[in-house]
Amino acid sequence: MDLPSVRQNKILLYDFYGGLLTEHQRHIYTMHYQEDCSLTEIGEALNITPQAVSDTLRRCVRRLEQYEQQLNMVEKFTQTNTCTQEVITLIDTLETLGATLPDLLQITNKIRKLLNKMNL
Image 1 (cartoon, rainbow, N blue to C red):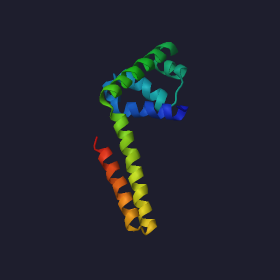
Image 2 (cartoon, rainbow, N blue to C red; image 1 turned 90 degrees about the vertical axis):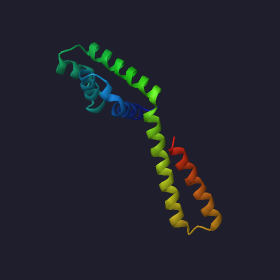
Image 3 (cartoon, rainbow, N blue to C red; image 1 turned 60 degrees about the vertical axis):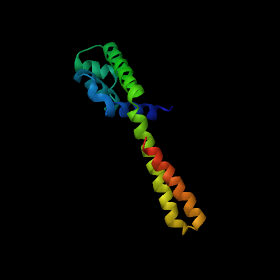
Image 4 (cartoon, rainbow, N blue to C red; image 1 turned 45 degrees about the horizontal axis):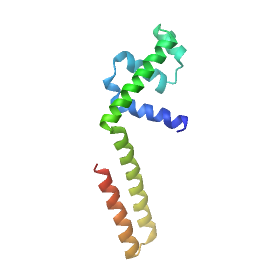
């Protein structure tokens, strides 16, 4: 996984489960992953050591990943977004094709499968 997608995943985890962290944990997590503050900057701002910041972030990530393993909300959200984009692409294809009946049937079957997939 590349670094931006790792960060994006951590932000998505926070978006779904961040409310389950303590206020202190949320503050540190937000400063690091959303405001891009370093461990030292966070430590100075909160009057704690960079090691304490690192430990807190590690616990937060572990807790958020545990919630995701149990609930799969981020995975379902990501899959639904992917399916939605595929449906939009297929609809755009229909509009530009002047589709023949076999093309139309094939594309509508793909759309139906994607929509069914979204109803996890």
